[in-house]
Picture (cartoon, rainbow, N blue to C red):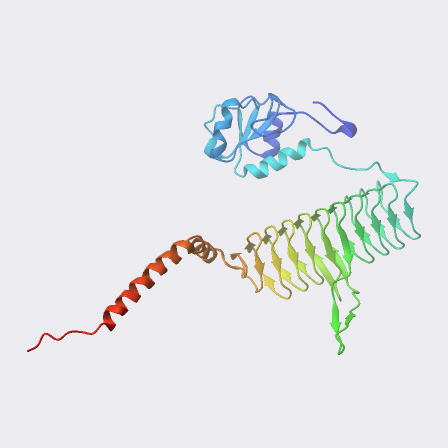
Length: 360
């Protein structure tokens, strides 16, 4: 078993991986595995994966030591790890070979730590990081270089706060939260009132952002603080890069927001919701539990639980598919309409023509 720093292992036996994944193993459990690669790149000591029939032709030249597959591929002539949820199995297997990203515990001499800051055990504070007075950082958390934590910020245990992250005053972050570089938590919400002269009077944004356990937020996102109360990102949410979340928004448990999503203020997003890339939500609507919104959609009304919607404005997905099919046929419809118009004009001319009597 090859091991890296602090006991991190870089090699596992195939049988050990099968036991970890809870999958059915066909093949030699003593095969050493040293990493994971796609079918076309995997070497003789690496694990690979196959989940769709269109990739079967790649097996002809595949040199992988073993494959993670669903039961539909159980008859392949490879050592196999057969799993009910192959993508989940792949994720868990990859975690075995992903060396944890951590700073060495301790405070860099250039870090700026103000008074009454509480630091837990094995906390790491990187070069030029700043932590404001009254803040706390939980055990095992790493605050990388150049990160800024304002006053009275609470960070939980075993978090990763990457370089350049900004967490403004009074925000609360739970345990095992990952925030990637360039993200700003707790910037002012966009709140203004127009007076009788048409001037925009700023409404002070005095709420907070609360981020619960096991949330991951990508790079260059913004999560605005609430006007009053809280903007709330609930447990297990995964947020991609370049996402904007407005003030007083709630994002329910285990929801997924893909890149370039924009959520306007006071919108309530349920649990297990999926917002695909570039989705935009207007403010003060509700997205029900388990709903899914297709890429580039503009949502102007509330969405029911477990409903799939797509389009601008967003409509039920099946309706959008029908509409899209019609749009693709517009030129055909135009030509058919043109021919029908000619026929109608010809019939009208026939009807308008004087009739000659044949009576005597």
